[in-house]
Amino acid sequence: MIPLEQSLADKKTILIVVAHPDDIEFGMGGSVARWTDEGHRVIFCIVTNGAAGSNDPNTDWDALIVTRQAEQRRAADILGVEDVRFLNYADGTLEPTLGLRRDLTRIVRELRPYRVVIMDPTAILIQGEQFDYINHPDHRASGEAALYAVFPSAESRPIFPELLDEGYEPHHVEELYLGLSQNPNIAVDITGYTERKIKALLSHESQVDASVGDMVRGWDTEGGKQAGVDQAEVFRVMRFPTEQPKTEEPVGAHEQPNG
Image 1 (cartoon, one colour):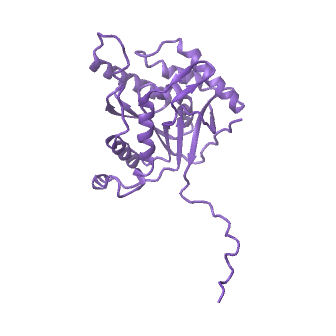
Image 2 (spheres, rainbow, N blue to C red; image 1 turned 45 degrees about the horizontal axis):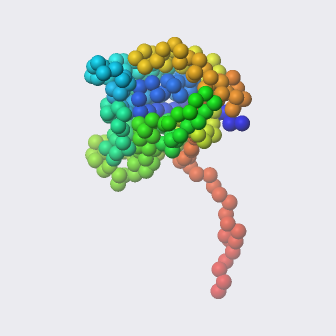
Image 3 (cartoon, helix red, strand yellow; image 1 turned 90 degrees about the vertical axis):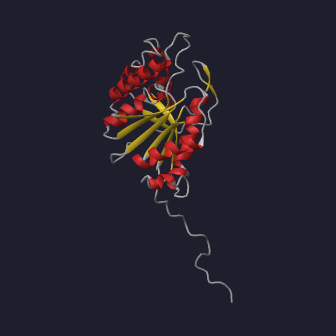
């Protein structure tokens, strides 16, 4: 049984970094809706421009970029998110470069989030009850760059010193949530939020139609089974509290040395 997330007592800033428009709505949309309803400030960062979202040889790629950004903003509005950042890296060939890590470090330092949500960069071959999936390399690239932006880059002054010149001081992230992970250890209860999640997903009209709803409901029901609730989204969560818990003193700590 995967334990359920405990709601945060205070209002926090949560930054979500993904590769493509619609990535959030597929796997994290219910959690986002819950978090914004609880009063947390959620910001989306979409790394690529979404231009590889069509195989039609007659596609106007520039127009598709505009369309997908508009779709993402509509989806964010449904989920209660007002701030959406687009980094506009090329879709389909993303790499976890130092330049991308620098851009994400700048955003982390600017927004100073308590929690950062990324796509698990260690997930490659994903097997599930409904289908098998080769994880998109853009997902892993955005996840890897965001992971190392969180640590060590965001909190280390010697890394990207040019950001200090821009006024972006170091920041320590307390929680890291990894989506699309094969090793989840926390479930977010989204019972009652799945339909809102699907409504947001259907804002991506250039990518999906209503038939996607049953698939997403199946995912959330499966997540709920793992957590003992009706519907849930699961994450691998790592925590890095600012104040580390005190450990027991080693045996003999008060003994005087011989001599």
